[in-house]
Picture 1: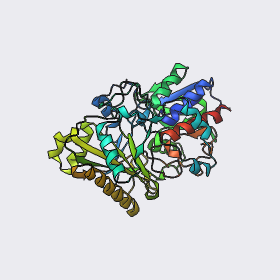
Picture 2: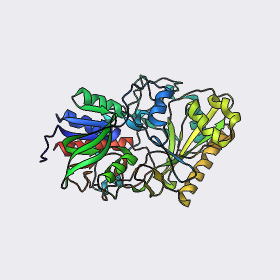
Picture 3: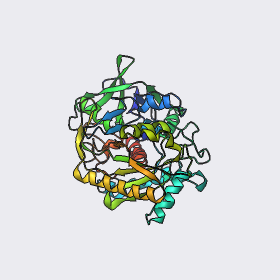
Picture 4: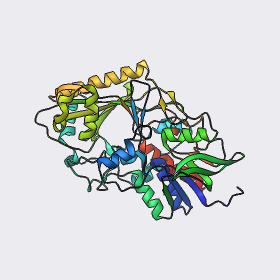
Length: 429
């Protein structure tokens, strides 16, 4: 027991899917929980300004890798990147996790009764996604609807605000769980950037954080780090766990664009359908991005003549399962170069996307600037945390994409929420 007068049963650092779930579950088990979130808690209103504040600031939300200026994005706000994600509920990699001693099937069954998980109804699939699906199926691709974290009675066709944060409450995000936790008595402190885990010997006893240019310390019986695939290894390194932050994945992707006469769509529910080519290590999905994001992608490609073609442009995302490698720097920079095999995967996926678009009647097909999403594997299970997500330091846990030990190339939110539920059970016991 710490000599400090512990204020809380648990401190959760970060409010993305993993941390939000732990906070909500522990609060429901009558634990006193504190959530430290670096970002703000401003209402989600689907605006470009709100999007920029939470995910558009270079050095904070946008990191440039050493691979041809590839950009890695992360959301910093209550709910983390889930505020801006495409709400895809891909099934977790059950067998991979079981090989590390982790079974989350019970937690997945529970979640399917708690949050919306289902493919989109036909009347919510936009004309662009429908055109892409028809073309892919006609060419013989097993293009199927994708499960979504969406309250479909609240979703709106032709909405342009999904990527900016749904203002209608249609998209389930980690903020839903944070709101449930705070309604149940958890305390949320925004603008609090955790700088160090506090120890007494090998025992984690608290967290030091900065807020309004002041350093403060808070104490708890259990510390759960959920600052994401970049934030968590940086915090652990600054706390003396120096092996964090190496050999990671970050799901590189390209957008492939093509203009089709007769299509008119300013916005659609994204990733309505797609295909996972597991044997080749990539996925393809429709992904209608808003006009501003579209402009940021066509400008570096010298496609200025496409500025006014957004509404009639079909878009396919190609994302790969990349090889582990690279490092996170001391201050959160991302250093990673794609391997030859990864480049071949991306090229193969883009070639297939081009084929689908051209079959749909698209002209002037081209691909975007390189992006990356879902950085993970920086605090791997069996290396830095055990199968209960505990570090080698007592009472210190990690629960976010950083713990995933292998790349599998799919959006991780469903997996992280299930891991959060499992961890909360372990801590409560």
